[in-house]
Image 1: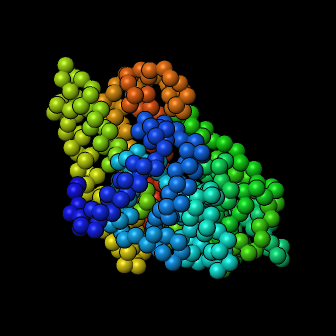
Image 2: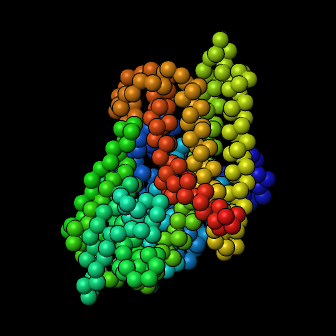
Length: 398
């Protein structure tokens, strides 16, 4: 879908393209283009380049060191970045911890934590889900006992993305069991180097490592690291989750994936002709592209509401569901187009550690891995089943 841009926005797009073209490291762009696994250094190198430009925290207002971009400019930055093979900006600092800190934190907390997020010198992770409290987050049991000047934290978090990279975690803990479960939850910032913190890897189906279990054994957390009031963590968590689910629509990344799918369909042959000329497969691409266009309009509408100060509310659940499902459909169609060449599993191709020519060409080497990894998209950020419950209750009154 093409959006009519003003002359100012067109100039903004040119500025983005010029900066990325001159500054994105070619080895990182190559990995992104090939859907290869990026290491911590890959993410940090690019994010720190953006940080020096003032673009890492691109959704932040100028008041807190962001560029103060409009909704349209943020959208254009994400779309152009994805189109030019930039890595996804890891959201845990700039899109999650940062907004909570500058919205609900103390002046001291803002001074302490925001610079490292803006500059991407500190990696954050999210401590929400637990073995028995995933989608039912309010039932979490990781406890923080009041010990005067600090809390003593014990428990476990699971599916913690990139905890093995993280310097800090923003974490929901139970500080009380009185009243409703939601009222006993507090929001803590935890130094991952603290004694008693143990990170245990969870290997994914396709062989990568991004998720972890995190164990807390008598971890001391200073009370100055609590965001807002004790027992109000659920309020801050909902604020964060609504924005996270808007982000999970991932329009720019999905548009780039659709473009690659079309290129694959032009390259692969069926009965001697490009697969893109097959009416059945072409209909599948058209259907998913129409869904993506509809999602893009809904996302822009929601972003416009956010720009006016409104909360996204249950609309964020709609975006999360459709965004993840469309991305999964595209990865499935890519594997279908490539066929049996997508079957071989060669970990070296996934990590870019071999010079051998991949079977079936560059795009075939990671197609199956990409398909398998994207199965988790409908689970993280609140499973799609739970999102449908939210829509049913809050939008349909069921």
